[in-house]
Length: 330
Ligand code: TYM
Image (cartoon, rainbow, N blue to C red; front, side, top):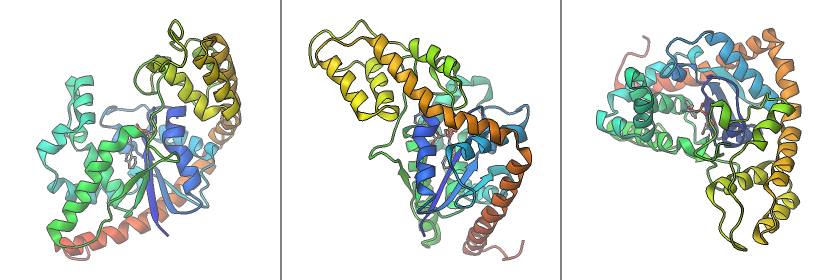
């Protein structure tokens, strides 16, 4: 069975960008692949060096994974920092990762701009740690949103480079995967960029109906179509992207028709959209609450996942040590 790996940083609650960009694919893939879904707590230190409660942050994502339908009987769910083999691979990959290429990645440049006082080596080598996460299980597919494309290119490059340097065929080159035909980017509600963890532009899976309605009604729009069948400006296209993912095809077609004939009322569209998001979120929200109350279960699932992840990672590290020429037993 082919192997799949993906992870999410525990820097808050999951939002619907995370869900449609990644978690929805996790849920689908767990039935047909050997899946490893982890919580990238080491990665979050690159931006948040002193989190309040690392253990609890990881539990939050774990509860949300489960609430979305990831099944620990099918997929291996674990916490990145529990599987130290990843660090050993990270070190080997870093020996063949070059400053120039790391400095050139868009996410590094962006982060360096956002946190000029903390341009740390972890940030620079973020893509090598991500490659280690993926390659340690020899994954062939990685369900991620569009924003991770460059990191995925780096992962393929590091895999190829390792194979070339040591003249082996150890690592496959993993492909990004999305449940849609194209990599997906969920927009923010503030009219620009992508949905991220900032309150104005994002809807969390655990958000209640009143708050969702308020946010959707405040989403940025324009003054309306200027001519029939005109192209949608970005802020309007964003609303249609949401309709496309959470509403029925009939609803989408109805508002699309109204856009095309110029009779659209954004207030109506937003009301419908808000109700469709609420209907989508509600069952997930209830399950998040249930799981969050069951710390014992969450910790047990993480422990079991760690064991399975260890087993797979250990095998790869043994091969890597042998290939480079280390003694088999450290
Ligand atoms: P992170 O924690 O920023 O985001 C987790 C996942 O959610 C997706 N995502 C989105 N997709 C579409 N539209 C959006 N607005 C949106 N916002 C977030 C992301 O693409 C991602 O799939 N580097 C990763 C974590 C990571 C990882 C890995 C992923 C570490 N190691 C190995 C895969 C494999 C990250 O920061 O994701």
